[in-house]
Length: 418
Figure 1 (cartoon, rainbow, N blue to C red):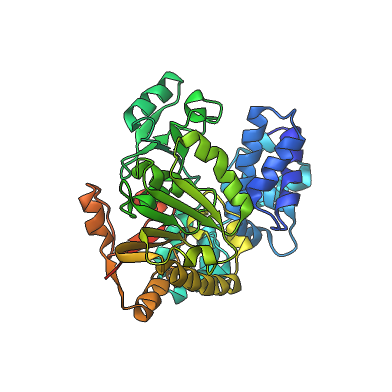
Figure 2: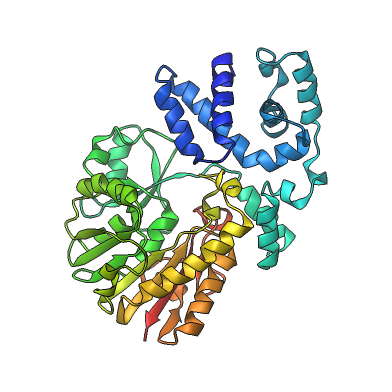
């Protein structure tokens, strides 16, 4: 750790910690404004900022209420990373070094549950209310302290998984096939992929394996009409389009013009010609009403707390609250009900989130099914088995987790209009 890195980390944290913007956006902006920082400096800065955000509930407990950002940095390096304190003498004065010694001796096992799990109290309260026991909360929280792997999806419209793996290896990039997705590769380390011709030519996209499985659950086939109801920047849209082999019609709906504009370059690289991006004002837009009862499958990747992605976005646990989740629940129910009108008889409705809270997941699905007897719940395990995917699941819905499956914490329920 050198003074340049320390000063940069401090600057970034002062920008991030009000939690008014996503941490990755703040970091990207900082790097853009400081082009002279080298690759090693950037890696150290990013890893420290995200590491501190992951452990912030622990650091606040260890340092006390009156502590500030520098206290948390000292505690992070001493108590979490367990660095040799000699490494810090070039940065900190004698008083701070005495603090570091105190923090190094901290006993996490004496801390409250939320601190041990490194989760905000509101998240632990929500998990307890949803039936999680202490062991499950600890397991979930600790799994979210790890950094997420880098997964790719081979764009089978252009190149199968094995040739992509071979081409990456020729570039010095190691990867292994993902255990569940038939299109996925898990890359060793965090190499820069956007510079590769393979990426520029659309042979692969960066996409978590769990997200790939959500696309697979639509059962999309050639010539069908499919809708990605909350398409965002279109990662799942592109995967579904490849399943359809660029035939039929694939509607990508979203209320954000910016998110849909981010889909355009990805769409151009992908080679897909069957995608129809559609900007909508709300889930009740007239564009949706005109397509009622016509879709073979509709994917609803609903707006959610994002808690299942805490390995990638640790700041989300501070940018959400118990109240914001209640507001999201109302939005989730409304979007699912509206999207269901698009599904034709015999068609599939896939409801998904990147959350592990049942209040955003199974409870939304159960309430929908109670109000819509024309839909029945399908067993995800049977659907995956037909695709030759053996995934350990507790019930007929899919709840993925970093500790059990190595993916982000995605949930999915598949329903069929009778």
